[in-house]
Length: 191
Image 1 (tube, rainbow, N blue to C red):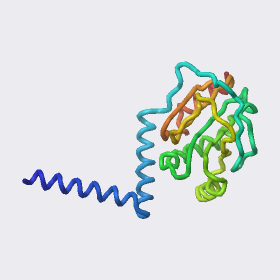
Image 2 (image 1 turned 120 degrees about the horizontal axis):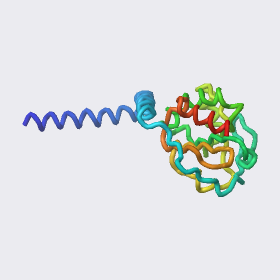
Image 3 (image 1 turned 90 degrees about the vertical axis):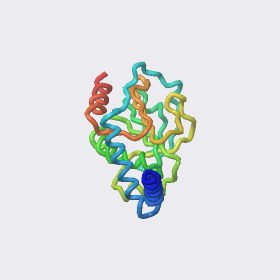
């Protein structure tokens, strides 16, 4: 009898917690929880370096600059190291990895071509960036991405080497300001 009551209390507490984190009061808790889990995940499972680099089937991808960016075609970045991040403001794991992306971007923005992709409007992105003090070059797609970097998962990040091959891919939030990521970028820049 005692075990049954204990189980019932556990389920009540669990559902109360779920309800709380989905209220306006709990959203901050949910974001902090996601950030904490992202940090733990990044320690246990760093971004994957591709064993075999896949070349993009096309580099002809039109991008519309919506924040801190002019219109761009991916082919303009050919011969450069390219960092592509798929994200959205409503995505908790995306928001959780933004501080580490901001630190990486601050140090590598003059060496690496950064492309932050979203399907959200300029106003939504600007409002979020202004609140968080971010200034990433952000784009909307105007044409289809090649299959090698096309995804519906958020967040998703791809790093392309100078030959246009995918050298790193990560689905889900990660710590992008890690030593491993920086070493990878430095190695790709030196190739």
